[in-house]
Length: 317
Image (cartoon, rainbow, N blue to C red; front, side, top):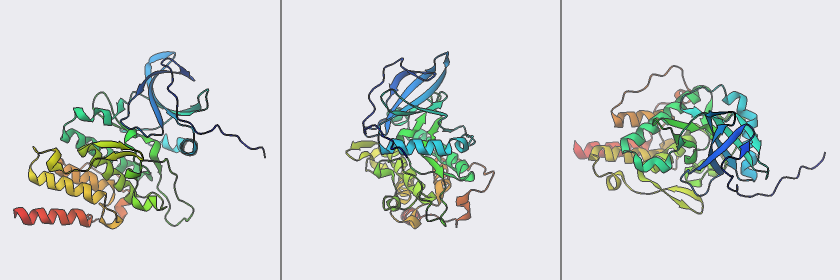
């Protein structure tokens, strides 16, 4: 069998505005708020029909890009059937002239959320988080989970709607299959659960950890580090002093519980995170049309969240 010689690893060089990738013509690069990332996002339009838009992710060359492309090839037909207004999945792929893989997500999906964060009130940020969790509730019903939570894949449209660019979605691993270990896209370590950093496959519990890290980022902001994007530390009281004390404590407790080191101390699934945020926002729970895999697990709240809420009730009671 002939050996395949891959191009050496290299960051994606900026592509010129107006450059063609297949039938698509590139527009401006899109900031995603993250220094260390898998590649560069671009706006694009269909060359023969400029009113049709797409988002293009040009990947850095290397093992991470190879993993992303392999996942896309393996799952593209199944992902196409995951029809949800808040989830956008790639439909095309290719390689640039200098050997950089790229993925195309058709449609007008806005831009990455983090650079827009300064424009949003706390309530608006949490509402977007609820939309993400509700989208994942539906994904769970079809045996998908967000194997890796990457803030650069969370977007906001011009009308304020959430879009999850679904490159991190993967089939829920079979816990009885020792060879079903999932695949890695190389997310920032701050968004990867401790058990996954130790080699465990992605799970609904590790998804909650990533969502908790994302929630901390949306509430507290972020900073870049040599290891990638990192949520800033801080309390809701320090950052949002106008929020009443009860809501400050409850939101802090949810963030701590979702990012608990021990799996058993986290909320049970993205559904539970959505329910807590809905209660915080004073919203009613969205109807569930089908049982998700996570609903088969015992319904309980993480110990860290329960303890914090008990402390608050004792303090004000």
